[in-house]
Length: 209
Image (tube, rainbow, N blue to C red; front, side, top):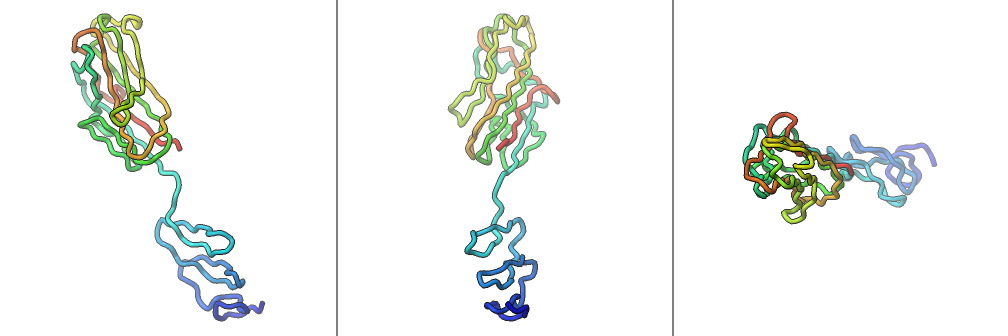
């Protein structure tokens, strides 16, 4: 093949002109030409051995992470068997498109994938009269995942006792799943609350894959 410039036909090594910011490739006739430039955020993608590469929207992993906490103590939410949805009122960070509603305690998963969910609750006010401390993750308003289950007497709690609840697990989520944390303390009076502060009650998570 002669090393000449000409039209994009067999017999010429180079095309007569190239697209600004395009990428050079050899077409089926062996002529070097160029792709279109594409747009911001697109990636150059192979279309197989019989077709020229083209710029297409990027696809792949989207990072998602969030962390919310309680800023101040919330007293007398359970103890008598009441199931309380923990209302974390302060968002520390929220990245990747998920939404958190502090009024309902609901986090909405933005992207299908596997997530690590972390829950830390500082519960106060319970005592030996209480029969069980329970924590659940409520998924889509219907499915309960038990996070913790403890007997206060076994833990040696007395009046106005304090109890740290912590759970971490992997959850295979679908986009738009909703999750919220709920606690219940049974057997006593409604004198159990959740503590606020930097490291007291935290609901967080991140996408793993």
